[in-house]
Image (cartoon, rainbow, N blue to C red; front, side, top):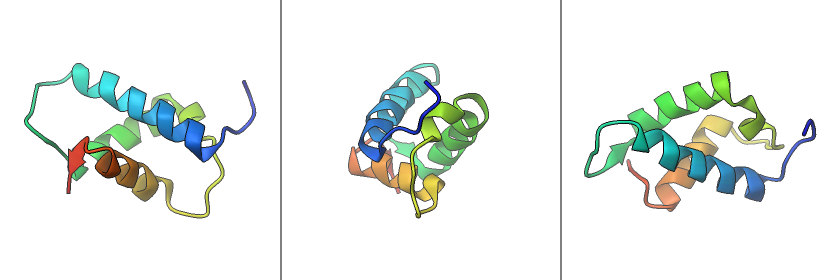
Length: 75
């Protein structure tokens, strides 16, 4: 692909990646911000294409916010 994606596209793809990522781990009633941090580190290392969007905000905090907003993690 090579070009930066929009934040909306990145959000959709990152939320889908999260669902796949947690599906490979132990089931939990609710996931946490600590898990979100581990997830971010893994996509930063292994899927940097998912973070190719432009943002003046801290991307780790932005992704954490998306996961919280979607009800996928608890604070």
